[in-house]
Image (cartoon, rainbow, N blue to C red; front, side, top):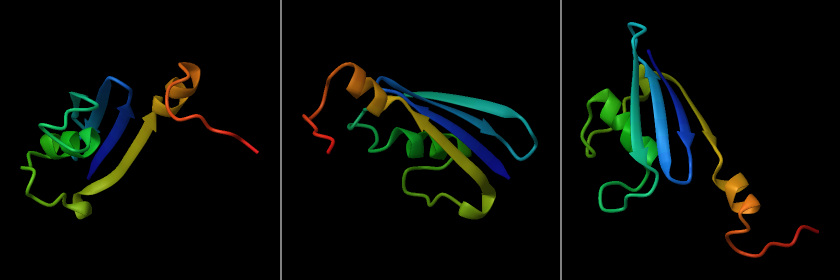
Length: 87
C-alpha cells in the first residue's frame, strides 16, 4: 500500500511517497497555485498515483497520509494574518 508524508510550507509543499514495492518518490509543488489546483497536497498525491484531477483517489490503496506544516507558526513569528486575542 502507498504511504505519503507531506510538508506544507508557505512557499512549497513537498511530498514523499513510498510505493507498495518500497520505492520512494518525491514531488515538490508551489503551496499556492490556484490556476492549477486548489490543494497542493491532494494534487501531489494524485500526481504520484498517476491520476487525473477527475479520478477519485483510491482509499483502499493508501495506508497512511501524514502531514506537517509551518504555515501557522510562520504567520505568528512574522506577525502576519488577522489580529487574534487569546483569552
